[in-house]
Image (cartoon, rainbow, N blue to C red; front, side, top):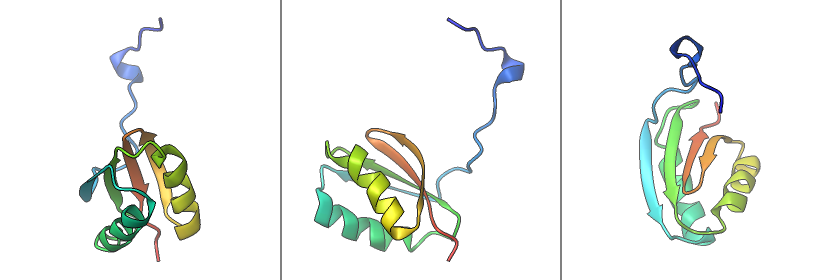
Length: 87
């Protein structure tokens, strides 16, 4: 096991999320609609945190981000961090 010295700790490169949403176990349709509405409310380039219990989320979230132009900057199921596209 590698011991990490305090001087080697890198600060998170992303700011704290502007908004969060616990989507529970919502599936694809309801989830996509909820994400669409909520992510529009944060500033372009801002970070949105969503918690999704749906077991398909690890495949769905990267695909949704690719299709919408947003960037998935963190993903540890069930938590996902999305950076809103600039425009």
